[in-house]
Image (tube, rainbow, N blue to C red; front, side, top):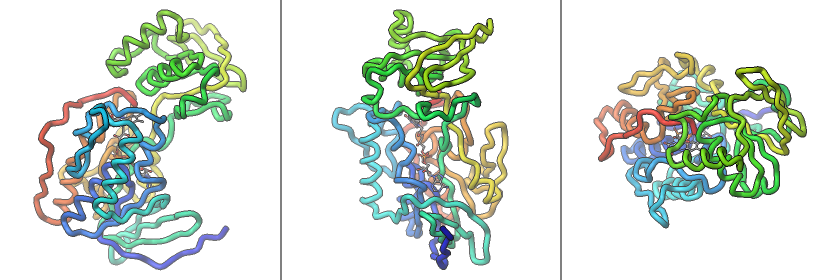
Length: 354
Ligand SMILES: Cc1cc2nc3c(=O)[nH]c(=O)nc-3n(C[C@H](O)[C@H](O)[C@H](O)COP(=O)(O)OP(=O)(O)OC[C@H]3O[C@@H](n4cnc5c(N)ncnc54)[C@H](O)[C@@H]3O)c2cc1C
């Protein structure tokens, strides 16, 4: 199908990514009287939407609330995926933000009169002109790959799905941090026969939410979840996974109906690269001015977890320590000091991979 090209639309600020930080920025700009359009490649809150049903945030509600709108839950517990997505919809509706869901931004280039933002919803290419563009694109676009044969077979997945579908299935989970441990526990309780393969001889001391650790250790010790510590996967077939003991090289074959590879996520660099943003460090994070959030491309900013690139096993950048990006960007764009800062300091310094 050939692409049709529509003429330019205009806005003051184009926000790429309608996750929590993109939405919080949209509200802040609206309050400052600055016109903004939000674009997301998927639904709003796409990153949260792919979490397994009923997954809870580990951050407390006040730390993941945005734009000063309280996040309340029916039982005062940490919000679930569903509660948070409902919350995001209500914030967008409450402030009447202009959001374009399922509208990926495929390029940002300087043009006369500002920055040209190329969107591609379906096959239609449409260019918006903006005075400033903020990339609030997150950093968890793709599950990390194992790099072994069989990884693209249909029963191999980088995401935990609705737990009901695993009932009665033999599931091999690869990974040893939060996502893998949470999946192992949930699937065990949902009636799957779970085996856990992790490279270390023991689970990482600092890589697991403290409330999950006693239960997973107990179930592994009792053999109710099969422990395959000190192993790495070398090949996946339609019926089994071939592992190798890392210390001895001894091969192990484990029968599996489903394989979950939960070893973290990586950031899609395509847009950052095509926009000309300098990427630095081993995680290829976008270089930016920490006082203003502006990148090396004038008028192009980054916000939220996007600043951290592809985070490795110890995540340091979370929603809860990104709220100040919003203040910095609005202050820089309007020339007025904006201070919506929280009543608390983020207590997170480093948290395990999710
Ligand atoms: C299971 C799990 C549990 C987690 N729990 C916590 C927690 O308790 N506390 C915490 O702080 N963090 C947690 N995280 C991390 C959490 O997802 C992020 O902190 C949060 O989503 C970051 O918000 P953000 O707005 O920076 O980015 P995101 O929420 O990732 O939003 C980025 C948005 O940009 C969109 N996008 C990307 N590229 C484009 C493009 N080219 N065009 C248009 N749109 C684009 C995406 O579709 C997405 O909607 C968890 C993550 C996982 C996987």
